[in-house]
Image (cartoon, rainbow, N blue to C red; front, side):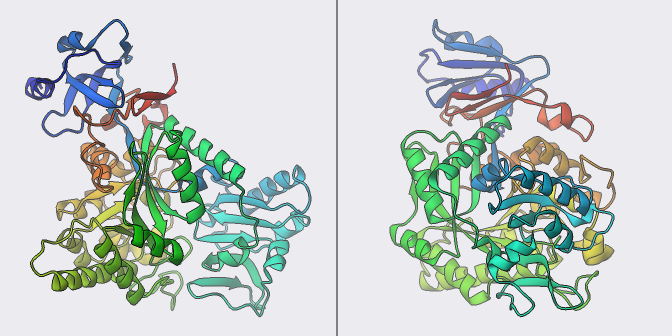
Length: 559
């Protein structure tokens, strides 16, 4: 252990020994720096780290005005967590809307919605999120009739936990003009009963038929949601977040907040690839980063398919529990290749949602075609540092796994999805495909691919600690679904932590200043009540983020 500590100490030599603004001591500091992975203190001045090393070498960094914090026994300092895939504004709005996570039956969903309706003026929209029919005694999709009877005076839209399906009541369906004659849009599905009437369940693009009827949040609503989301990030030690799909108005708000110095989370914004005017404008302007490093605009988000839970993921073979159905392709190869080609030419990163094995192959093929075209057009240039990503990559045919590393494609995955999905994945795709194709984290890493980790909040809770346990155990922290997924795909704890820090920084082109506690890097860090590497399914619930620092500022404390 001495050698890494000495190596860390040596990193401070030759630097100015002016006192630090803040110095933090802890029983353990996990730097995520391969040269010096363990230390005992970290000191920073302004928004930059000035020293990392042994306790005995810390005195020279302490002056009369230096703020000192001593972590309690068992605590650990880590780089600020980076959520590599989440939805910032949706997270904030979800904290204000009806929470349906954990509902154990459709009757409970109806009861919660009726209770909210009782305190809401008639005619006002009710929105909620989090129901999952797979958790109910009857795992079939619900019919709106019970919900409609309980909420006759309000239009209601309740999103499924994955965000790729929703349940609308009769009033919402009527406002959207959805009836037995309505044709679903491309990339969407309207579920119907035996008589051909809409059940109220809408899949993927069909959700937009109702969502487009809901009044757009005004600036005050959006600012309030952003403030809630930033506070939630700080509470969980998240200091950077890759926002997976952001439109023009929200981007403009983030730009204003960044310019005013009000952001406390560093945002790697993925532009909504369905917003063609926004895309054309940003392609013309090129990548952009706000000066203090709190907002970067150099990525694009596209969707290749839907979600597995709502049978919208695009598969190579039929769903085991719905013969004849292979999900929904939400984009064609021509459009995907076109955007990838433009992204390469203009310096943008392309991040494409793909869950099913067919969708992942579609994306890899399109990326390969764009890279080949670029190489043909620039034969004397090295391959661009594109860092294209596939978001989720949940089901991969074995022959596609090595293509990630070969093409330089980053696997942006969410460990918690595997454990949340465990109760029903074998029913969707069968035992053989589950073993061969589902959530193959270890195989991707062993093949040389870069793996970054996100929570997909608000689809899942914004808890990196919960996520780390999912990555190392492949069993659910909340339930007993052990053995659903092959144990050999588990990650070691260090690799899981790196996916939420160092490797997530790389996935956003921020490895030069984020993701590692190193002299010269940004002073973004979290102090956890225990060593995150030692967490297991039994201990994670009692673990807490004691403090969060963003750019050297204390943004969360339990003290």
